[in-house]
Image (cartoon, rainbow, N blue to C red; front, side):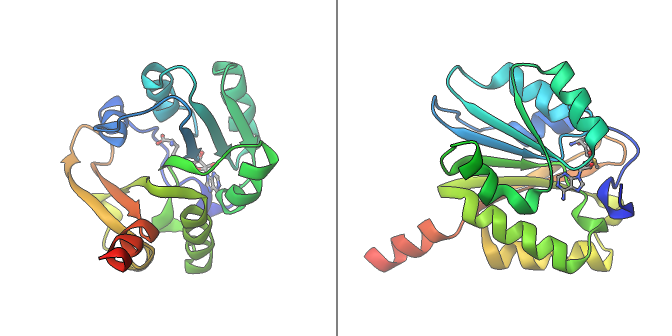
Length: 191
Ligand SMILES: C[S@@+](CC[C@H](N)C(=O)[O-])C[C@H]1O[C@@H](n2cnc3c(N)ncnc32)[C@H](O)[C@@H]1O
């Protein structure tokens, strides 16, 4: 495992997991991608909230965690690999563009080049008006890599809404929520 690949020794709390999926109106047929499910705190909540007919793909970089996820959630699909590969994986698993990409990735620990590759893959994998949700720990949000990520993410996406801080998480965190930009551009083109 690479040093930038984990980002926290503590799994996210159920409070953060709830904030990650709040106000999402899932529809049958939606494709939901999870980056870096880890030990599965978001996956667990997604399993409870996803209606029948949702297609889910978890992409986990760590082989041991990926095997453990397959064991814990046998009805869900997990790929051992990197979020950079999302576009190819959607084709490989015969999935359409994603309605939601929910990320547990440690962007604040990642080199800028990797952040960029994942952001491009994410933008390409989302359907019009698709949502990209990630989070940042308050303690690391002013680090150079976190600031770089926050700048680049708004070059690729428009902010959906500002979420409150989740204090009941270690470390406290804020959900970041973005909409795919192409749709906005199309709306401006029409008017
Ligand atoms: C901070 S942990 C978060 C785990 C879980 N989502 C949570 O919130 O507790 C980050 C996870 O992302 C995985 N990961 C790191 N880089 C990745 C990448 N490029 N693609 C997919 N998963 C990655 C790590 O193996 C780890 O499981």
